[in-house]
Length: 262
Image (tube, rainbow, N blue to C red; front, side, top):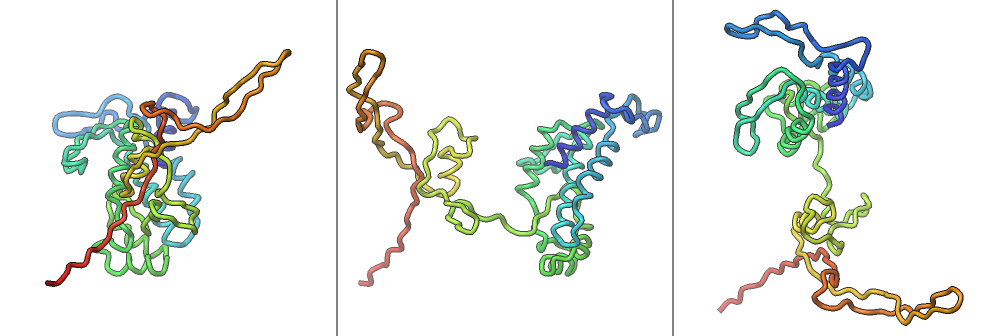
């Protein structure tokens, strides 16, 4: 996504005349583009944006391990999604058919496309048709083996090396407390990271509500001049109010029941 964002920003600024050394791309102007039609106008200067992004980001991957090769491939995928504005046709965004036109793709649409590709990402050691290159890359961490395996993969595919950790459960090595017992927010903000839908339901946890005890100021008196003195009282909020309970994630416990033999 970072690679796509940098490419998009540089290309847009170049096309709009934001840089002295580049402008829109007219290299296709006057050339035949298909049957009975010819290129015209001035396209977004994607070659400039891609070249500068490649110099900026790819140059950082100086390592000789498989991780560097995977990052370089994914950077290329990020640049590729900005090349054309495309409309996908297919079930669940599978993009079995694309209708494209030559202009800078909208960054929001590019992000949505990358999200689909993220969900369909391929693990490096699971690449097919690569002989032993993919397994060797995963086992030895060799950039050479990884690059050989990735050559057979389309640019639009994303690749990863290892599964992400499960943040639903407690993981002390990562400093993750897990979702069980966490307080979550009420419905209405499912996009929020700590909403009950995101925090509990997606982790297979049940949402429970508990009454809360609150500390409030009470028995306040005014002393001349000029001081207000109050006591601190502990109360349960009255039932029926919207804030008298807090929601928490509760783990569902499953038990195996032994069948009795008659």
